[in-house]
Length: 382
Image 1 (cartoon, rainbow, N blue to C red):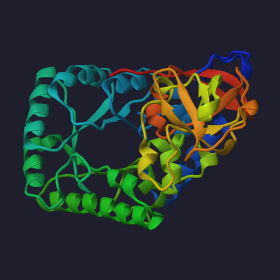
Image 2: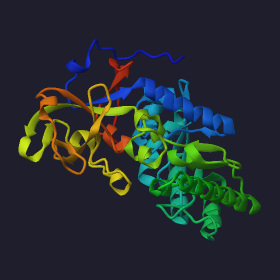
Image 3: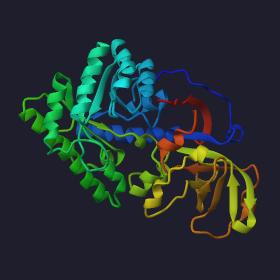
Image 4: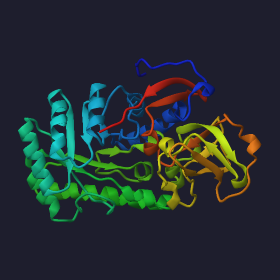
């Protein structure tokens, strides 16, 4: 299995200073294993998006290997993972010329970096910047498969124009099915997944018919990776949040609440009896301001409240958050037996959005069988 020296500290939950980010390694391993097995069965490459993890230990478990193909969103991520042995890196945000020199240094050191573009202007700028830096960074054309964000429509004349502008730098096509996060049923996610696949496969076909090489056909998103029926014509898949899952994924039916691998450990610091509130020391600086479940059937506030063992407590959620204060109350209002929540007692809060909550913390307190056993560092920055 993976060989790495971990930061091991003798501890218990009671010795961890709150607020703190907990990571259940047993759930992490199970989540990673399910995705690997699913994509292996379909014969496509798993290229996990590491913006969720920002940790070499987590990413190695996602791949079940010391290194492998990864997707990044920041140059800092590319540099960190290269320094930890990863060489096959897709930079999956539109690349501007000011960031090329840092990526060029990685290429000169042996990295295989790929970029994405979605316009003729961006393609030309990439070629100019890489030529100036003395390197070649191949690019994928980003395809807009659902009108969610960036990209070229698969049937637009821009597709071939961008390909011509890239010239020999063209390496394939990619898309992200962001609209899958807006679905209300599993069948809806499957429909989005079908549109995602069709968009990139048809785009690749158009490019090949025009005489362009298109070896990579890349799709992404945890919901579509989980529920797609067909990956025919796709070469790689780029899910990210599946390693942890979160309340948004649970609300979509992608996972169960009990599959969520991260939580924020918080201490009870006060009560407001008249308001039926319990105050904790985890505010939006620990939880983030993400309210992604507000648009779903069940609104989980700023996070679902659990006991110290990670079991949800009735219908308690963090209903509001200040910078360092979280306000715990019943979803929809109602009284709370404050005697159950003594000052200094511990609660765990499951996040709406794992990426946003994890980004507030510098380390994972890793649990095995419910007990903290080690600490894994987590990095940030761009």
